Image (cartoon, rainbow, N blue to C red):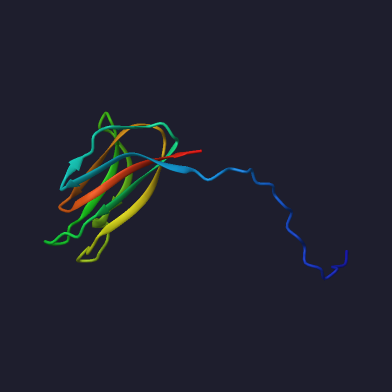
Length: 124
């Protein structure tokens, strides 16, 4: 079969009309140093953690943040500044990371910094 020289057109694949999620704030905490947040409940299968950790006036000021089930078992790695080689982690350190799975959780923070953390769930 001879080639016509015309570019072939990709077939159109229909995509479902899914509206964007609305992010609804569930909890918010302002703390200093090492802490576990109070337990919180998430109904949505998609949620996120938003944080800002202020600059540490002394030293590197590492910041780690992980999700735990309320029975104390580890659920999700979120952020660990000790994985970065930079000798100073001048801040503020900010981030937003998504988590899948509904249920009851708490966040464990290890740091010398002061910080704000919020939990938001997606609603459609």
